[in-house]
Length: 148
Image 1 (cartoon, rainbow, N blue to C red):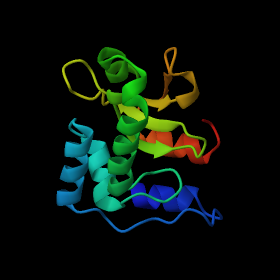
Image 2 (spheres, rainbow, N blue to C red):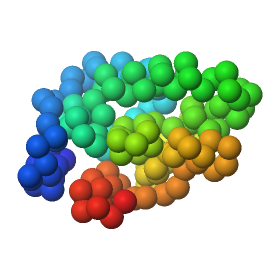
Image 3 (tube, rainbow, N blue to C red):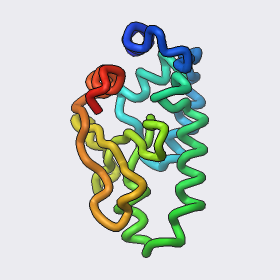
Image 4 (cartoon, one colour):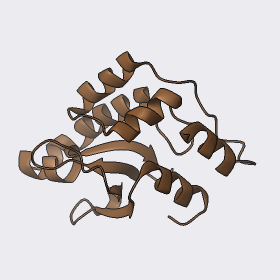
């Protein structure tokens, strides 16, 4: 489903490179690196395609993003602020400008599965995320139709 959707919506975009499926083991590695369980729709997307080198991150990119965020931001905030502003997100896509599409993780450690956000790196002093879609399918569609 996701592979076909991205292929259809990205026609003519030479930069989109749909990748082969990701293994369950690698998805599990990415979950462990993030520290939160992935929503089933993200797992399904990775099983179909391990990113598209444009909007959607691969499992390896997700792992690297967590490492870099921890390296860059952990010392800038108190542990509570860091958790709230950076660590309680599952980043799975980017807009090419340093902002990421993500799920927000609640205090109970479970991701909100019915709302996807854009996390804006330039506004770490305030509330740096805002809702953009209710599902991966909607986010992909809206992104490729220049609606977000």
